[in-house]
Image 1 (cartoon, rainbow, N blue to C red):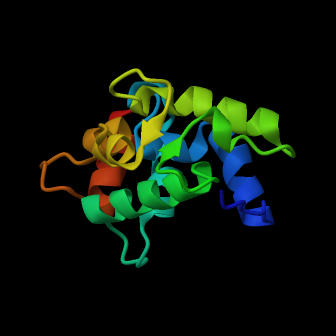
Image 2: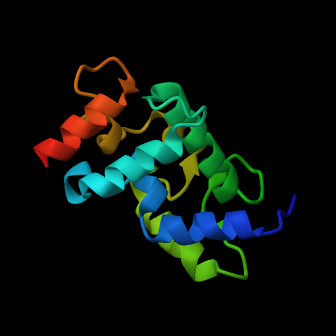
Image 3: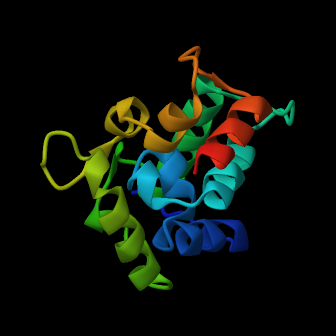
Length: 145
């Protein structure tokens, strides 16, 4: 069993996840419940190469990183066995929000479940369905809201 230490960045991810921040772009929660500012911030977070647009591949990359943070013991699943002693309540909150990724309802989230889950904020912003969210689409989504 490999144990991962909790760095500040990982702690920040747990805190943000507990608040629902990165999980909306990852697919948890409803896009309708998010403000335009929140959706825009999430999409910018996913823009790994900072080119002003978010591709589905970048969303998958963000989800993969989040899964790696949640799967602390490296067994291929994010579940209660990954709960850290420090900041455990934040992990619990993140896992509660991430529960929608548990497609088969077995109480644990596989990497495939996380990557293949719907991403309501991305889908809502991707007006033309090309799997790329541009700054124009973000602006249009902001105006529509």
